[in-house]
Image (cartoon, rainbow, N blue to C red; front, side, top):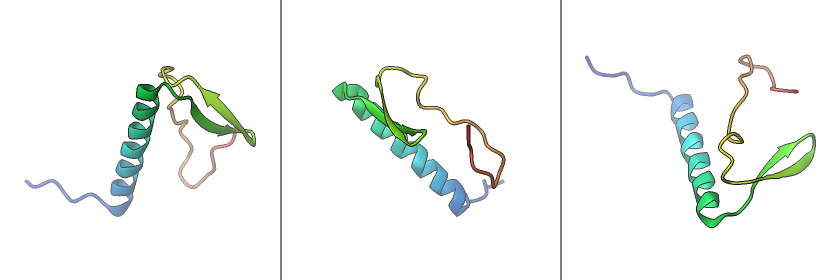
Length: 66
């Protein structure tokens, strides 16, 4: 059987993951800090810290708030 074609949402998620992966790898190669947003402030991270690029699961349709 053929694999069903991915939905637009699945394609968008895959594109975002690829983009993030590319940016993180570029920052590692150049040894430039990665920037994230937390509690209304910019936070800089060591690009070699492999634990910073994670996503906390949130229930569908709800914002992920700490």
